[in-house]
Image (cartoon, rainbow, N blue to C red):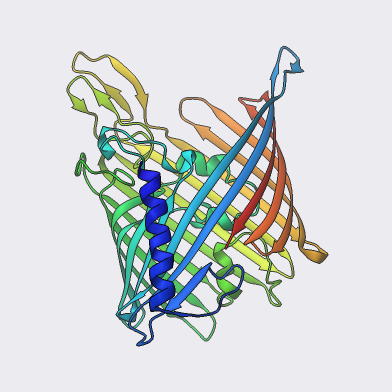
Length: 396
């Protein structure tokens, strides 16, 4: 029934705005509808998105690859709204997920309802280069996670991101940037969040989450914010590089991946522990060549959830390190070949390594593209199998 409500609201929105607003810049990739009020008091851009994924994997057992397991999936189906209200200095973004993968993860902590809302955030440029964000959105963690899933260079993110990213949360962020010289730009971000992830309705179960990030762009900004987009689609004429460093501290965290993962429930309530996550990353682009690399580290003061009688619950904070390196080259006619190496070394003595080779065809940049890749995975030095994926992305 909720899906019908969402569809009705979307149709109502389209009818209402078509009667009340002026249409601006209607072009594929720039939003299905794009309105600015006649008195310039607000704007709304609406952009749906579909991502279709098919995959096949072969598990390696007893010295040979087993039967093929296949899967067809609507990986992402989303509705995005953004614009400004009252003044261009007060912007907003709303993103709603509709696919099963988008809305999964509901629990008593989310009111036993699907997690439809991805982003719901207000951005207020209150003084010069200072911007205050309030609401639910991505925290300023590793670069790979902050890059939109619509702008990825391969079919999906790496195992480093799967293990260590700090995803979305509800709270406040203050962002600022300044120029050291004519080109050298430094960005600062500080976030104060609830610490339990997105769509939580039960209040603050543990402590709060604090995140700080610094970014350095010594050769100036990238074209079209390319430091947060995969591939060098703009073919930078001069070398561009961005360095980033993030530190996240989740005080009395109650989930085993900081603000993600399972809740660490015991017979007396929720296990609480301080979790620290550290990231270093870099992005380089020049004449179709792109390189991105990341390092991640996570530690916890009391990583093992324990019952009142001293027995372990089996839930453990995933501590360890991760490293990720990927590089691509954009050929003529916007074909691209990309390779990625990722390794995750956890304290529970699990070491996972992935090698991925991908080919992408950008038809209209990241707005309309076809991507395919193949991945080899090993765990503790043993062959775990192969994964093949093919994905089509359409983003209006």
